[in-house]
Image 1 (cartoon, rainbow, N blue to C red):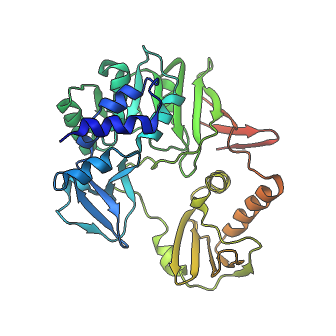
Image 2: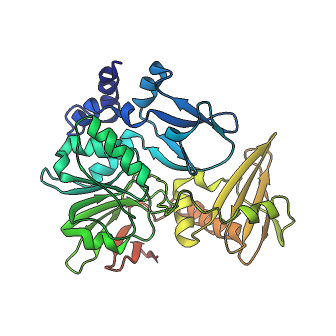
Image 3: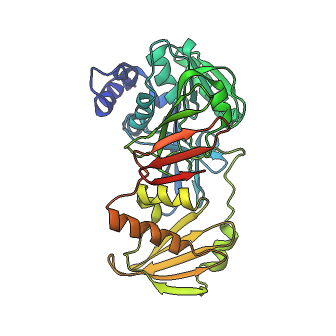
Length: 376
C-alpha cells in the first residue's frame, strides 16, 4: 500500500511546509493506528474494516477528520466483522490531525521539552515523537487495552516512547515541561500542577465545553493563562469501560410528559451542542446537563436533562418558529439557557473565549473577562 503518498497529501491540508509539524504529518502512518473504525450509518454505528478495503482505508485514514474507534465498551478492533451498534456514545477515537496539531501548537513546545500526552489510538503520540524524539514523550491512558495496543503499533513503526496505564485525573508518572490532554477534564486535576515543572504549560479542554485552556505554572504552584479564541471539544475522562448514563431513566419518563411549566420561547429552537459559545457558557453556569434531539417529519425536538431530575423539552416545526417548551423538576433548565441567549442577543457575544484563566494549586479554576467571572 502506498500510504506515504497519502500522508504527504494530508500534511499540506493541516500545516504549511515550513511548520515543524509538517514532517511528522507527512511521514507518520496513521492507518497503522486505525485499522478498523466506527462510522455513523442509517440510525446506527457501522464497523469499517481497513484491510478489507485498502483504498477506502487509505483515503479515510489520511483525511483531516476524527475516526471513532470505540462505542461504549466495544472497540472496533474487537468487534465481529460486519457489526453494527444501535445506540451508544463514542468513548475513544483518533482525533482529526489538524486539531491534534492545534493542541500541540498551543503548548509552545521547545526542542528539549519533556511532554506528557494522552494515548488513545497512539497516533497523536507518534506525531509528538516525530517532532521531539521518543525519549522525550510519555503517553498515558486509563484503558489498558488502548495503552497495550498503541504501544505495539508504535513499536511496529520504530517508536518507543514511555507509555503507562494511568488515570489522568490522578497521580502522573513523572515530571514534565508540557502536559497536553486530548481528553477533556473539569476541574483541572491538581496532580497536573504537581507534575508540571516550574514554568511548564498545560493544555486541555474543559469537559462539556468548547474551551481550550492554556495555563503556565506559577511560583505558588498554581497556573495562569487564557482560553484560546479557537474552539475544540474532546471526550471527557472516564474511569470505566463506558460513561455513566445518569439521565436515561429520566429521559424515558419525560419524553412526552406535560411539564410543570409550559411556555413559548422568543428564540428559534436551538440544540445547544450546535453552538460552541452557548454550550460553553451553559456548562459553566449549569454543569451536568445532557442534551438530546430527534426529528420527526418537520418537527424538531430537543431535550435538556439533569441527574437532579430537572428537565426541559422544546419542539418546533419551522426552522425559525418559536418552540413550545415544557419544563419540570427542581430547576428550570430552559430558563437557564434563555438567560444566556438574552445576553448573547444583547451584547453580541459571550465572555468565555479569550477569558483569563487562574488555576489554584488545588485545581480550583477561575475564568474572568471584564466584569464577568466564574469559579468551578
